[in-house]
Length: 379
Image (cartoon, rainbow, N blue to C red):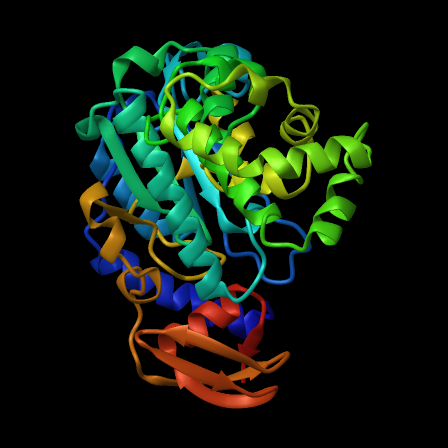
């Protein structure tokens, strides 16, 4: 941002923090805080951290006076959160955190990325509550203000977990380290919860997909698998319908399916059509965030300095109807002139704005977003 753009955005943030009803995390006095300030012309983002507050009034006064572009607090609880080194802080535990960021999942227009990451978040929430027994009342759901969602689990049962235990959990969520032989040998049905059921669904989808091709094309695709020749591929295609019926209708999979050379080659591929179908059934959360027991996370109700949108807390039951480009937008519709670096279509506030390269007039909310993203400057 140039100085004029920085001042424009900072004024808007100042106005928001002067009026907003902010919320603070539980056990505030045990949290470390970090702030990124508006710094026009800076080539890199620097954080002011190792800060602690005794109560909400002190925190909120600090925010209103400083007007930062980003606000973070620790997911961990410390004896001395303002100590200058991590070793001196005295770690007391940490909330279980999941970060779902569209940038790590799919590329494309912003609104489409937000739609996809919502789907991943819904899958994660279903796994936590339906499969892992997490009480929904212990879950705090937050739109990050940028490209995704944060899921905070405040259950005391997880607070003392180290990185290794958290790694086991995120591996389950993301479907990492799955053993096909084990999953296929567990008596289940296609509708059973958990990875055995998901694995069967993915395999049925794959078998259905390969059956859509001509025999010649199917043979060509199958013989590209490691160790699969024409004879194995031809035998597999003859048994395909029988395999689908067996996967759909039997609690115990026929050993013939488990021993089939093509099946073995398909399910052990690290990439390819079957792996894509299996990954679609995982919840693609950011693994390093969950395993990090000393992570800083954005403060709900603060503003995201990279978008100007609100870091919006919401009820789990409200996720399906939540539209970040309406519900997390806090600025008005008064007109502002901006100088865009390139043309784009920007959906926001229920409309799509066609913005040309160069100077144009847009609603204030759109102007803040474009400036925060580095797409435009104030004209």
